[in-house]
Image 1: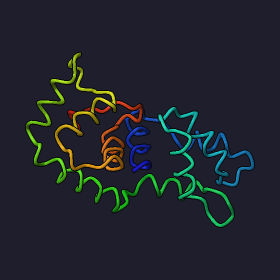
Image 2: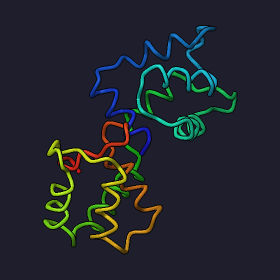
Image 3: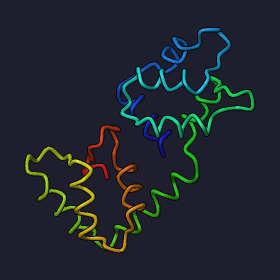
Image 4: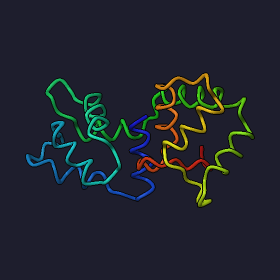
Length: 157
């Protein structure tokens, strides 16, 4: 899910992640250690927390303790089956709320910008989908936070 968010953000901002990666590849091997990857991701202002960067890096690190440019690029291009599963689950979990969910999200948006802070979004979900657990709420916010900045564009959700 984090990689999908990174991919959306990179595409949305038209960022050249290869150049950012290369700036931190001081030995020119095409591979970064997790700390250097964290630096590269931080310079791209992707809205990732330190914990999310650590989780992403942990899933990409090879046996030599490095993350290769090729592995990082492959990970960005692929949408893991888990992400599709989570998105399918989210659609099914929220389907009963349907139109009422949309109307409540719009009513909660005082500025009518089409964007809500994550906590307001979670409040609406708690009200209309009480069967959703706190970890599932966190997952829904992660899926819905398209810009990676903690805001939810409910029009795209």
